[in-house]
Length: 232
Length: 232
DNA sequence: TTCTATCTGTACGAAATGGTACAGACTAAA
DNA sequence: TTTAGTCTGTACCATTTCGTACAGATAGAA
Image 1 (spheres, each protein chain N blue to C red):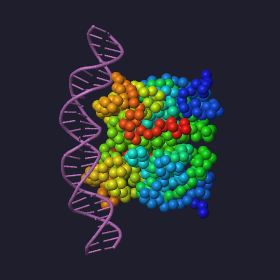
Image 2: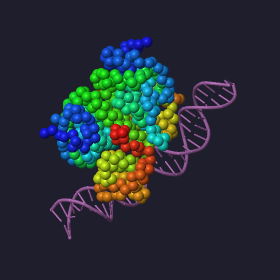
Image 3: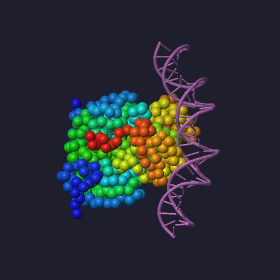
Image 4: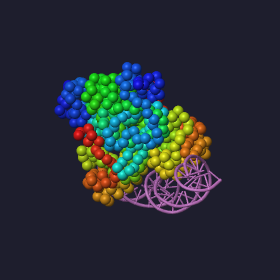
């Protein structure tokens, strides 16, 4: 059963030409993406690419001693893992579903074949890879230079962008793991942002109520929405 | 005056086939790379790619408020900037020469044409891009999870790898900017590593005297040498 | 040699963050 | 409605790192 390109919410898949889409469509499978589902694991061969339609996947950098920090996030504007079309059979990053949703699964073999066959697919996917690269570099900067509150603000904004929503359903505990800070530190940062009137805490969630204010809170840790370059 | 591939010390250029090399060689220009030379600047069009033969280039992530942190480094194993062949006309990163040396300059136009023309060039360069991506992700992790001393140890090891030397000629002041820590913090970290017998400070330089010890100091912030995957 | 600029070592309080613990609030299941 | 589990708010001290300052050491220029 073929998937109709016009019904697709993933930006990469909907933007490519119908000829390019035809290179992929036979092997695309619509799947549920429940919370915590692991999309790729460090050190393991990657079997599938994942194109998100909604929800958010997180890419975390890991070290052998168990440290984990989020390097980047991907929503409907992208896919995981770029290692596949860049020719690496595995990745040191762990990708998993942070906010559940739906997406499309594609065997790596089909991805690499289409990438090899079509210059326009390469152009589209390479730009996404570059975009993600920049996001990760920005995360490295944020982790070295900005306070917990600023990093949290950046993170909420990036999630909001990708969800197209101002409700971000994640616990303080979870946020603290992503940002590599204390759980109590997240609570304090949220309170501070709440005091300024930028967010409203809920149990198990945070709601953005003043996006501009939140952007100011993030200072320049949060810059442009990554889609901008692709969409322009 | 053509450049002979066999005389080239850059790993990317020496590894590609002679047919692939022929796509580039007419436009390659051998250049000196003095300290602080800017190879690409945030927000500006990229005119040339740079292939290092020795020395080290630094890629720093920048924000508008003037924060700067090193996201990754590149030596003879690679080039800058990956944005060129990934199809982005500019990059948010600033690249400059950290440790002077020599290299080859190539117009972006030639790079993109060769990338479009040759699947094997794509394979080689894409793997490098993925490698660099992983390095930057690891930097994001290090910045969030490790102490100044651990990050410094990682950084010295990465430099040593790329230089093929244990003498790293950089001042504390410079290191502090790269790591986004106090200059005095670098001094203390070096003293600690010296006390353990892993490095020896010189004026304007640090010498690695016990590589294994330094690796232990870096804990798991420093993992594998990035060349491993490419060379294997 | 002498001078000057740069680099390094050291010190101090201030601020941010970590580690940990515990109580109250909320939610969902029994 | 009760109960158990989870989540959030708060507190305390320890540790790391920052900001800053200044003196001594070193290298190169005059």
